[in-house]
Each structure stands twice: as structure tokens, then as C-alpha cells.
Amino acid sequence: MDTTNSDELTPIAILIDELKNEDIQLRLNSVRRLNTIAKALGHERTRKELIPFLKDCVDDEDEVLLALAEELGNFVEYVGGPEHAITLLGPLEILATVEETQVRDKAVESLSKIADQIPPDAFVSNFVLLIKRLASGDWFTSRTSGCGLFSVAYPKASEDIKKELRGLFIQLCKDDTPMVRRAAATHLGSFAKKLSKEQIKEEILPIFEKLASDDQDSVRLLTVEGCVAIASMLQPEENISLLLPTIRNCLNDKSWRVRYMAAVHFVELAGAVGPDITKAELVAAFVRLLKDTEAEVRTAGSLKVTALAGHLPVEIVIKQILPCVKELVTDQSQHVRAALASVIMGLAPILGKESTIENLVELFLTLLKDEFPEVRLNIISKLDAVNKVIGIEMLSQSLLPAIVELAEDRQWRVRLAIIEYIPLLAGQLGPDFFDEKLGNLCMTWLGDSVFSIREAATQNLKKLATVFGPEWSQLHIIPKVLALYSHPNYLYRMTTLFAITALAPVVGQDVINNTFLPLVMRLAQDPVPNIRFNVAKTIHTLIPLLDSAAAQQKVKPTLSKLFDDTDRDVKFFASQALQLC
Image (cartoon, rainbow, N blue to C red; front, side):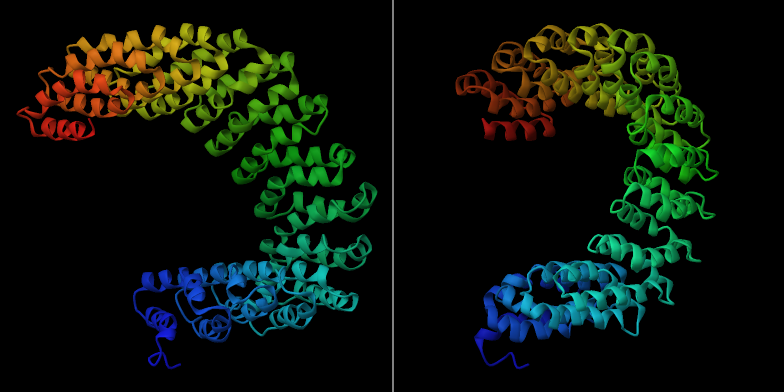
């Protein structure tokens, strides 16, 4: 293409040069601004020049092709609207056949978006033919991409074409290449949802059963989602006769990956087959998954304990699920325990107060004392669910001592994580109870030997002030913070400044003018340079919160003195604050 004779061709010329450049980032940036180039060219030239050019640009790095596949999915308006959307099918079809899976998936996603905009009269002759080409391609890459487009095309097709599409999809389910069967299994559920119940029973179920017993476990595990989709379209009695044998096989599969997938989707399976089958068949299977030899399966099952319990009668939960939960609390895998800890608190509302106290509190305590920090934190983050059921008094007697113990843990990262959950606890406990049980602890952190703890503690005070309000802050936080300013250790005095900086936006102007500002002024004369330059930084934060008179009469003279300081850092931060002043 000659790009040198006309200024009008400049956008294409620039694009050609950039896409030939060896710098991948430059090529990627060029693809990301294709819409700008298309706007400059106009609809007709975009269709006639830019799109054909892009068809020749698919021999590039995967990262560039991925960006191209994504951009083209949003390109309909730039080629002139839906009536010209078919012009985008060419480059996307090529991208749907490349070797990199991510690029193919993105091309299929873009093709699906464009399919919704193609006019009906052009749909069959263009989009359906594209599916046929992909589904019958010599390379498995095109056939895998084809599998993802059937559910898009099927609702728009005539009855004859629909029959042809069903036959073509069934052929893909029988493909010799495992990758194609995997793709077919992945999209089986979404395709089945477009069919009638009779078509599912007569045509889809036989091929589904074949996929569910495939010799490749990577294919079998993908049929679980399809099973959920199909079961949701059938009656309970049909599920018993048609799907239950396949569900049993999935739950007892010799491959742990299939069992894992069954555990991941267990609640959806239970919901699809209905409560009767769940109680009669699936609960026992779930118990087996919770006792599985593979930790990954037990982890997936643990995450579903509470969700499944919500669909079962309480007596079944207590008799069949809880014994497994008690075993999982001391499971050898920390990941299993962490997964259980993230959901076990949700059992409290299901079981009620008495059963929670009798069966769960001891398990909570065990998990709160777990050696793995994530387990302990998962419990703390969900305490509100238990508080609502057993009440604050019972909570304080049973669980809070363990939390206080964690807050004083010798590992500073554990203490840091606890600090992050204190505002959440505060909201659950209320101000009075919080002051009594945890208030002093929050102030102790301000003097921690680890800087990260002290810094987090000051932010914690800000969050508490937001939760309980300015009045509570003035009574319970501010006096204790201000008491640190005269501490002989300069780190405590520094913490006072950090706390003032954090609290200032939430305590109100009166506290800033009458309490914070005088203290900051006194600390400006501190003998330690680190304190003085942090005073300048604190003032910089306070200035926008002060009225102009206070800024000029009180702050500016102090900053001027700091600007004349012998320490370079003090001078620097004072100058910044003076500029703002």
C-alpha cells in the first residue's frame, strides 16, 4: 500500500511503521489506539484499508495479538455500525486459530460481542459459516474456538441450521483431540441452555455421559459445570433417572481433580437436583469429600460447608456435617483449616444460640489458637456473625481473651494483622464494651518497638474515631495520645505527631485549634531534628483544616523558625509547609 503520496494516509502510514517496529511496547501501544486511527480515517476507509491491513498483522507477539483481539470486539461503531459488523469477522477468525490460548479465548469473546450486533439477514451467511469453518478446521486450535460460539449463534438460526449446529457440536464432543473435547465440555452447559428439554434428553445427554466418562480427567472435570446446567433444566425425577449416576461417578472419580471440581460446584449441584436428592444421596457424598485423601479436595469442600448447611435441615447438619467439621479444625493442612475458618462462623446463625454454644464455640477457640496466622485472622474477620447469635457477653468470655492474646503475639506481622481488624471488632462490640476490653490495647500499640505497628496503630485510631465519633475520641483517645508528647523516648513523641496527622481530618476544627495545634507548636522546639521535621510535615497536613487567621498568626511564625533550622531536612519540610501556608 502506497502511504507516501497523500497526507490523508498518514494514520495508516504511522500505524504500519509502528507495527513493524522491533519495540513490542510501541506495537502494543499502537494497537491500543486503533480506535483513534479509525476515527481519523472514517468508516469507509477503516473498512477498506485498516481492517484488511490488520488481517495481515496477526504474525506478532502474543501480547500484541491479545490486545488486537480485545480492541476488535469494540470496533463495530468504527466500521460504520451493525450493518458493517461482518467486516470484523475476518481478522478475528484468524486470531481464533492462533496457538496461544488466551488470544483465541479473547477472539471468541470479541466474536460473541459482535454476533449480537450482526443483522439477521447477514447472520447465517456470515457468522454461522464462520462457525462451520472453525469447527471443521484441520488444526485443533480452530475447532476449540468454534466450540465457544455455538451458544451465541443457535438462538438466531432457523430450525434447519439449528439441527446442523447440534450435529456439529456433537461431533466436536467426539473429537479425537483431547483439547477439542475439553473445549466442548467447557461450553456444553451454555449450549444446552439454548436447547429444548427433549433435545437435551435425546441428543445432549448421551454425549454428556460420554464426556463424563472420558479417559482424560481434564475432560471429565469440565463436565461438572455442564451437569449443573443440565440438571437445572430437568425435573427432580428426571435428574434421578438421567443424571444421578453421572453425578455419583464425578463425586467418586478416581482423579482428585474431578473430585475437586465436584466439591467446588457442590452447592450448585445440590441446588440443581433438589432437596430430596441432596438429603438422600449428596450429603453422604459431601461427607466423603470432606474426608478425602487429597488436601485440595478437602479445602474446596471446607469452603462449601456453610453454603450447603444453609440448604439442609439443622438436624442433618448437626448429625452428619458437624462431625466432619470437628475433624477439619485440626486437619494437617493449614490451607484446609484456613478455608474452614473463613466460613465456619456462618454456621452460627444456621444452628442457633444453644447449638452454637454447645458445638461451635470450642471449634472457634481451637482455630483462634492455630499456629497459622491466616486461620486465626479468618476467624476474627467473621466475629460479627457469632456475636449476633450468642451475644456479646458470651463472646467476651469465650473468644476475646484469645484475640487479646493474638494482639500481643511475638510475631509483629500477626499483631499488625490484628490491628487491621480492630475497627471491625469495635463496630461489633460497641464503645462501652470496646473501652473495657480493647481500649488499652490500642494505646499500647502506639509504643510498639516495630515502626510498622506504631504507624498502623495511628491509622487504627483514625478508624476508631470514625466508628465511634468525635466525642468518644475526645474522651478516650486524644488524652492518651497527647500524654505521649513528653515521653523521654523521642519515638513516642514522634508517634504523637503521627496520631495527630491521622486524627485531624475526623475530630473537628475545635480539637485541632485548641488541642492539637498548641501541642505541635511546643514540639517544634524539640531537640531531636526528626521530631522537628515531622512537626513541619504535621503542620503541612493541618493547614488545609485551619482557618486563615490561625494559619497566619500561629502556624506561620513557627514555620519561619523551622525554616531557619540548621538541619537540612527540617528546612526542606518547613519550606514546603510555608508554600502551602
